[in-house]
Amino acid sequence: MSDSNDLVKSGERKIQWAASHMPVVSALEKQFASQRPLEGASVSCCLHLEAKTAYMAYVLHKGGAQVALCGSNPLTTQDDVAYALHERGVTVNARYGIDDEEYYRNLNKTLDIGPSVIIDDGGDLAHLVHTERDDLLPSVQGLCEETTTGVIRLRAMEREGSLKFPAFAVNNAKCKYLFDNRYGTGQSTLDGIMRTTNLIIAGKVFVVAGYGWCGRGIAMRAKGLGANVVVTEVDPIKAIEAHMDGFRVMTMDEAARIGDIFVTATGCNKVIRQRHFTTMKDGAILANAGHFNVEVDVVGLEQLAEEQRFSRKDIMSYRIGDAWLHLLGEGRLVNLACADGHPAEIMDMSFALQLLCATHILGHHLEPRVYGVPQDIDERVARMRLSASSISIDELDEEQCAYLSSWRHGT
Ligand code: ADE
Image 1: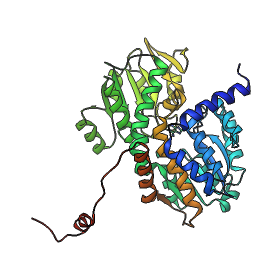
Image 2: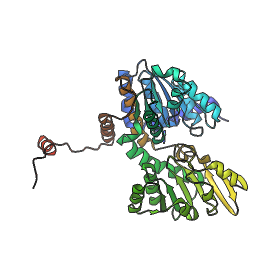
Image 3: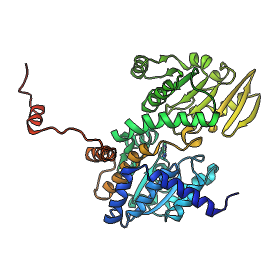
Image 4: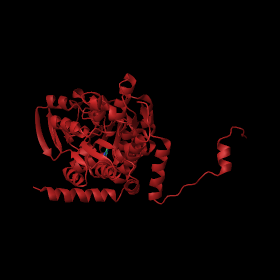
């Protein structure tokens, strides 16, 4: 058993490793420490608490904010990182493996600081502050949302007229979804599956449900590792895209019979359900990369199972007839529940956007609506990222600008 000093040391090493691969957030750390743009602000965060997240929360703190943080999923907090972040001056209400009651207690404690800004991943703080904690609404100046699922929930609130403060869809910034959702989810999902199973990907029939940015990234990386990739979709346009990207496209009913590994990345519930489980091959592996643990119908799986056993860390196996099906990480986000989340260089851009949007909120009085990240913030992050990689790009000269802004030219 580690004592808390060992946990702090281990968490601190992880944070320092991540920080040393996050040049954009590191540059912002220096700027925030000298300019203190968040002086006097209170920031409540609900995020997957691993090393990169801890570093971002620490930079908020260095920028002058009082910061409280809870986990955005019961299985994605790394306890050593939580201890280390607490030592760095952030209030941490998070622990690995908590039940629903503690999860909601932690959300509430995180709101107790009376936030002026909220940083959410999945919409749980937004939901709570619009329902049971609506007494806090007057002091909230705005929110930043990290993920697709959270943006979908915010848009539903906006449509209904229930949204009470401005909310920035950080997920929808180009420097977020083009890299985090695609390359981040692609790599970290495969990482989670490979670490957990220690099995080969090459030669397997690898079924990806959903061909949004996350699904595209997962399919691309599975193909790169030699899998025979199948995509399932409900959107006809995304389905053609997957087809033209070279993947087999079929229904989940068809895919269920032939798949060796299944990964859901749809944002929807019951994508793989009882009628699919009953036709799956012995040894099929089930994993989810979507925000909530509803994409694989785990309750339905448990009901069908004639026998259940714990096979390996983070693998629960269920027997249906002669077939054993193996579920990774309880059907929760496999890249975080069974690995360390996206690579540091990816979270560098996502969290730089969060830091700049949090600052932007404090400088503006906006109507309660869902906003895109301002283009100048998106481009600033891209330029900082390029500069960190010593990549220079061309610039338009005056003549070219004039050409591009005129319609009076032709053949
Ligand atoms: N690390 C921290 N937050 C994350 C997220 N939303 N997805 C992947 N890795 C993360």
